[in-house]
Image (cartoon, rainbow, N blue to C red; front, top):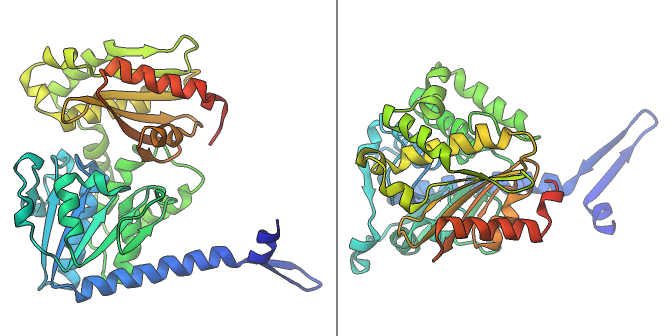
Length: 377
């Protein structure tokens, strides 16, 4: 109570009372100062590397391409490299700069030949390890480091400057403010990237919260550049190849409910994967998109469901990757318990040395024993 009084000053006159929350004002100033610091660091650096979390989704991929676009506009002479561990989403492969991405492979990575950069920028990555082992090594070898992210801040930071806005729906939404700070005019190519990230991380505007006004204002500004918002939406959210449609039909047989119907999981087990056509096996990004569609727009909207869970093998095939969506339930608490992270309504983690069914059981058991189904975001 005393802290609230100290952080808030009241101004009165006979007609009205006005309240100024200085702690909120300080947060705004700190955020703006960090934007300025990032713009200065980019200006001073001669060679820069950009990276995002491994197996990037559309927000992560669009973020690195957007920052590259911004640097090319403001500082055309700088050398900029992009490192990604995994494949870029298909909706981004039409952008010319995708060809410039250097794809990392942990098995073939030589730590003795790490290139030294003046500046490394990590985008949409809550933790350092999410950059992958090779990505983290490159990042840590840079003279200066920056993190820009919209996920809640973990207990431990990993960059010299960390710009975090957990009220933003995507990292690309934050980058609009960075573009303004760098005096960059947002034109069509950049607007397409920024809008793609927002559409993707909001699951087509289906998981917005009380801060949705900021998101729609950002989208309105991007739409005014003349981009085809309907086409981008369809490309990011709705587009599906014929093989992925076949996968959609098959995977629905792997949906499982708890007895009370409040937790539902869709499981891509190793045995299930073995029996798929090779074309479907090879398209991990496409399968992930289908699982997201089912988990977000179908399972979470079934009457009585509080938590939907997507479970699939980890990339190294020795554990389970779990993606959680909550219907008013703080699923980030679940992910954090298993050394993962994310937002209260959407989070993820990896569970080592567990089959898919056993990993799902472990997560369900934690949710039930902690009585999280009775707690609201």
